[in-house]
Image (cartoon, rainbow, N blue to C red):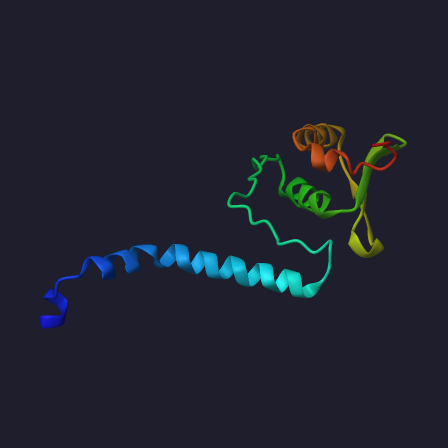
Length: 130
């Protein structure tokens, strides 16, 4: 019980208060010395971002359109074409795998509206110069 009620001296208080800053300074100097020892001019420390961009989830009329949108979010390229009267979305997945989705015209309109909200996905549309 005596150790818990003992008075903390000013010196100890300052050491405790400064310890997080001292740790940060030691880590930074260790990182700088590692970068210097690496001898690579283009080697830079990684920037860490606190916030992640959260996309608004679009509500689709069918779960199948939600699964197609998930494929389009991770694909390398995609395009929407008409074969006769039938709209088809052609998706090129990573690794070269290809996928086709046959849609109704109103489903294609719904999908296009969702893609318009995400410019990073719209840039992957095949056949467009960007």
